[in-house]
Amino acid sequence: MMSTSTAQQRGKYSEQNRLHGVPGNVYVLRNSGLKEGLVQIGLSRRSGWAKALELNRDKANIIPGSFECVFELRAQDGGGAIEAIMQALQNARCGRREQDFFEIDLHRAEAIITQCVRDADLKFQNRYRQESALREYLEKEQTQNASVEPTEPVVQNGIFKKAFSWVSKAIN
Image 1: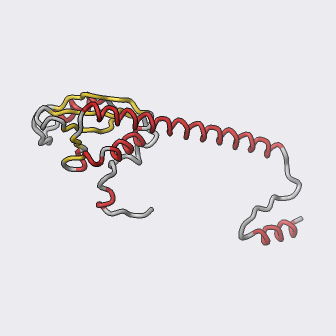
Image 2: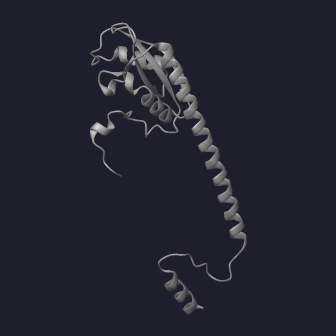
Image 3: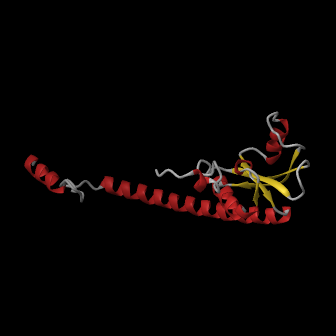
């Protein structure tokens, strides 16, 4: 695996790869102590309201005011959805990267999130269908091959093809 610098990683959500294929809730939080139009967007396996309560109870949180969940949408592929959302909203990002604050109109954010979640879920469903069809095909092929017993050993193409052929002929 190639290492990437922190400058290359800045635009990426920190947990997106671990969350691909994992269902989750994409939430939009608003804070009364921050300026109007500044929202926090993230992904949680729990609800957005639970995330808001967690941030309000956190004593280490230095952000004034209280958080409230203003929008929440369930995604089948949480990692794919949040990756697409962060990519779409990268120009609206404000503050530190790990806090995921964006300066964007709430209705525009809802529209972008809804579209990104819909696209990510569609990709996930298509990938699931393809993997299921491939799995069925391979299982069917395996059962067909198991019923037909070869009379000679099957020689696979590869680097040791001649050696395998020679040894199998020497044994027989």
